[in-house]
Length: 454
Image (cartoon, rainbow, N blue to C red; front, side):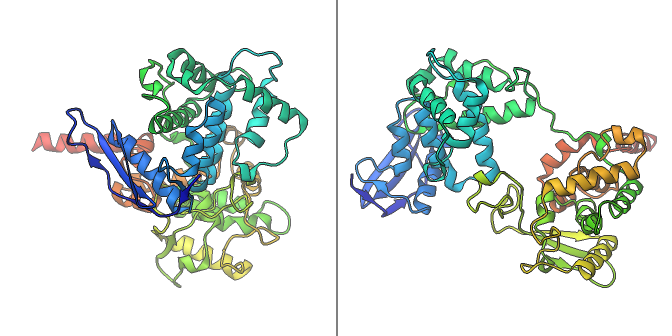
């Protein structure tokens, strides 16, 4: 096979010679021009993105077909199982750790349904373990599977449906029915079903890009996933007094000042609406903490926690850019004097790490979610009544962020300003926090009454 690293890509163009709308992707490999015409602009953009990502990570391109080797592997796949593994090889290098986990989770649910009837089928738990821990990882990340997992993978290789079978509606329905259920046979949550269907949709779109399928089969199926709830439950949001009582209670939790080390972390989630991953990654250099008045945080890094098998570094807190933003984007967040004081006191008492991180575990590592969640649950018991402890009120540390955004909106801060501080788009902000806006109806009624009286 002749390959080349000399790749040049052009912008997508409209196919003017066709009466029906279609779009052309053009590129060169080793000086040879290549092009592909696709029915929709979205498909063309996906193909161009895949080609660009492959070139960016230094992948060789086949001179004969003009495709990067990862796409060539997918195009040569004859079974659904082989195609899925090739898809993961292609997606892995430029996907975030949590995205990799999500893709694996969805496909480990769907693949066992896309098989022929063959004797010796392993149980559901064995199939899922074999897929999640071994089969649905790139070749370079796979460890040697134990005998049980090896048998399960071999059974899947032999029983997997042909890729062409995905063109049949009844076959795709098997996958949709599978993602609608948990491993114990009970109905999965609406959000889980929606997330897994999105992964299936992306997989089928990739098959269309490579002309293995003529169209995405999901588009032909009248199958509606359960409605998801995007809005925040207003019952989880604490008021200002309750937030202060919780932060005080945190300082009384644990030995050797364990809770006291974490109080400022929780304060950042409440007073600055930071996501946990953003708070954990906060560095002293990101903070402007004047002796008096308002300060400012410059948020440009997040360290979301995920299983180490999905990260490139083997670290459970792989450093990433901000959610839904470019890697170099920075989000400025003004912070009130209360948080400025808390952060100054925390730094004076506990110092900072060698890399400037403000929050560290007792051994100097990244603060694990299990550690701060345990402290949080104990603090709830100290600060709340038994009835409140049993309620959804601030059940998770993340609910402090919800409380902060709700407080800002109800204080009359404009939606664009709140969205900028919290790292949301305005439409997502208003949709997610629609039920947390207290007293807005009375204000609107008063304004309408005043207008009618005038």
